[in-house]
Amino acid sequence: MNILWKICPLKAFRDNYIWVIHGQRHAVVVDPGDAGVVQAFLREHELTLAAILVTHHHHDHVDGVMELVRHQTVPVFGPALEAIPGVTHPVRGGATLHLPELSLSLTVLDIPGHTAGHVAYVGHDVLFCGDTLFGCGCGRLFEGTAAQMFDSLNRLAALPTDTKVYCAHEYTLGNLAFALTVEPDNVLLQARAQRDRARVGLGEPSLPSTLALEMDTNPFLRCYHPVVRQYAEHVSGKKIDTAVEVFSILRQLKDSFG
Picture 1: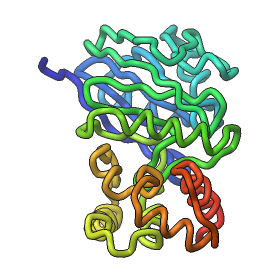
Picture 2: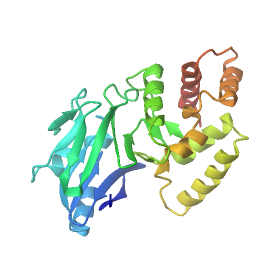
Picture 3: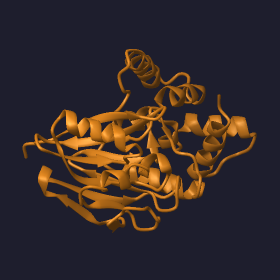
Picture 4: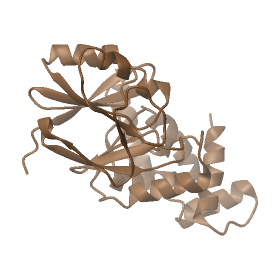
């Protein structure tokens, strides 16, 4: 299949990314916390908004929705388990969205943990995962449990390894610093840190990542790895029996890191 669209990042607030999927005439936006930057992009490229995708209810992901639909009617897809103003199509895991203007179909995944109803959208080897999976990290547990987030990350890790990861924040450098405390001898992680620091230093996004890269470098996807387990046991001072316990310890450590 010929892909007739591309994906562009729009920077918003301090470190958010609003992802725009667009062809020559139409665009779909993901997590538009700021309507202004979206409207400017649409005007500059002479694009018509075709749909909005929302992953969860936090204000920096949804505050632009109502302004974007104020003068036009477009479908707004968002998690059925969260109350989000402007959502016209509540979705749950297993649903498939058809976006005919871009010949694009995306499947919905339920990935609770960061929030109770968080969803992701995946298809055509691209993943929009909001604040669940980050470059070399994962989201905080604001509403869910460690077990829920760990299960959600495993659901994402089960996708094809060449899937491109489009998350909603530029957190990669901070996450890399933490990851290197967990696995300082991981040569793939060292190489990633050098590469991503250079990219961000040039003002470029560190994203998208790939699931293959995350599986090799992201400690929250490597909780089954003996080195990561040993680190968690060392810092906690106790024997750890399960990977979800490793995850829980790492998440608590990251909450207070740097």
